[in-house]
Amino acid sequence: MTKPLYLMANWKMYVGPKEAGALAKRSLGLAKKMPRGVNLVLFPSALSFSEVKKLIGKSKVAAGAQNVYWVGRGGETGEVSAQMYKEAGAKYALVGHSERRHLFHENNHDVRQKIEAALAVGLIPVLCVGETKNEKQNGDAEEVIEAHLRAAYTEINWPKKTPLIIAYEPVWAISHGAGKNQQGEYCDPKKAEQTHLLIKHFTTALVPGVAPVVLYGGSVRPNTVVDYVAMPNVDGVLVGAASTKPPEWEAIVKNALKV
Ligand code: PGA
Image (cartoon, rainbow, N blue to C red; front, side):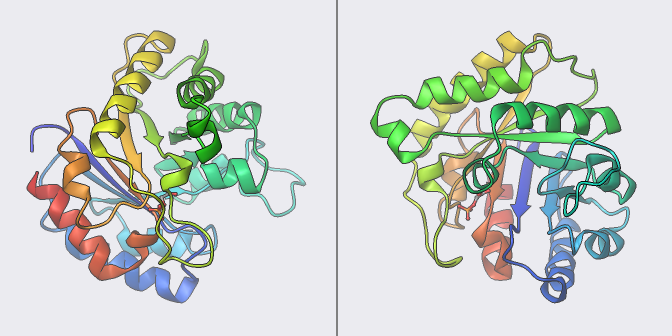
């Protein structure tokens, strides 16, 4: 392995508090054999965050928020702020996940506020971008991705030592629907590589002097992770459904480390 590698597990709303502890312990076991330069990150639900953080402690496993709100403290019933996640020991925050954008109508303006709030408290935002099936079919993928990036980063004051991480998640490739077994369409790793290059190109123009890290997400499985991670501009993976099944997640991590 020659480049830093990010292996991120987005547990979405699949994992309740009872299961979360057991899953975190499995990742702790995996981390023992991890070489330097590998970043293993878990994104539990808000409900399980503190328990997971307590278990992983100061190990090589980090934890992040699936979503954050930009106001620090206030009357926003049901929300959890970036500031509160920071206080609870989060290192990362997912921002603009397609499920937030499409199911909860988060727009590019909300996404920008979340990125700024995350940066302000010292969380590393992981911006999710990607086109829907319709946008792909209409030939609009590049335009959509560029719009996501522009809204997120135009004239942003990026803190020098904070990694700039983007997850390219084509919406049509994400596991979806009635359960965690339902796989999305396969995104050819070579096609993903091209899009990652494009994302790096756009991002470098928007935030000069910071090398972007671009992860791939969308139905990553033990048998496909190697093909993605082997691409020069794929710096890791963001895994949803498969990260909640211990044998699959363990195989994904082990296979990724072989590249
Ligand atoms: P998936 O989810 O691996 O279940 O497709 C990825 C994501 O949405 O982050």
